[in-house]
Length: 515
Image (cartoon, rainbow, N blue to C red):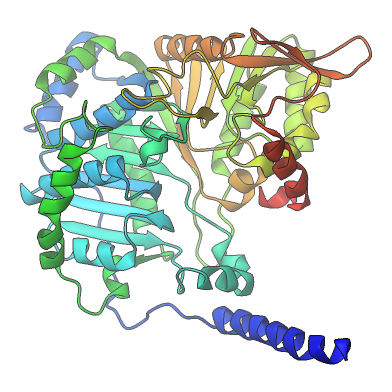
């Protein structure tokens, strides 16, 4: 009797699941739309406001170098994005992996829409992971005559259906565009680790990421357009309008007043301008703070007839580490070293290079599976001669750097992706040192030869490594792992609670190749 009751409920459920997988595997993208036009970045115009900023920098440092400045505090990351958007006269290109429809995401979007309304050409390129209010909203936005929106490697399904579609089309959908880039008039740009959303700008109440961007001026900003244009014109993108039969800017106009009113009333945004404003004084001050330098842009490319992107970014990083003479500082949120990486680190320390590495602790980690995988390699890193640090979830820098007033989050996470070699060369970009970033996702960044910028970023990393901000990981006399910080010494990896330890343990089933 018992078996007879079980079988009728179990077998149909399996059949339903298999049917959904098969249907999702056959899900198709729209194909009845005109191909999007091939467009490229506009050439810089000497009559723009940002051209004046570039000219002042060139008067001071010469025209053969670009300007660079780190954006450390999360609030500055949002403020300078607003400044560049408000100061653009001709074009805005924005490329992001994630763009949340939360207060900061809607605030930036509002400023972008205001730029389009005053005649600025806006191109927005988003990965189809998480953004705003879905494809229908993006299609409505694209109905504006000055706005184009394209979606990288889009899903045919939405909601729960995506899980089944992923099972059926993993080979295609497992490759995501992890890039983060904003370019204004081809004359100033922001690149680095931050996506668009409250957690990246210090406005999240549960947690906020500690992160780092670099704001660039001059030829470096113009050259970063090569990255944007490569993806914008690739065969992996579809226009947002392909997903909506009747897109309408009027629907956006209808809801904008309510959205703007909510932005004005938001306590989290009380220190940010809701409406566009003049940033002339701030831009003039930025010129004084920028370091001169030369650069190369480094990014993974998507090639026709293959799902797998190139690995240009990580190869460029390996090369500069291999050229190090004295010191390498590595600050990276997600580190899962393979044998090649460990060999490069061993070779460097064997020739006398001091290597210090900072990453997430389990306590600060937002992806426990990564810490589980990384944890398998802690001792290998230490044996390779690496000085290893893990970020605290309660760092001294949380107020003001991680959290943006008036917000005080429950804990801090770590999201930085940078590297400094010999206090002369800096990498800033989107690349994590894990298999997903190296082999599956597309990544981008810039390698900058600038002692000024290198010393600034090195000082930030060393501040983050202080005992008040991080745990120093080492081995005791018995060869067991210990974690040391101003909070004391512990012999079990720091975690916020037992549930987090359980999450890390159970997520150990995820293959390292997918992390």
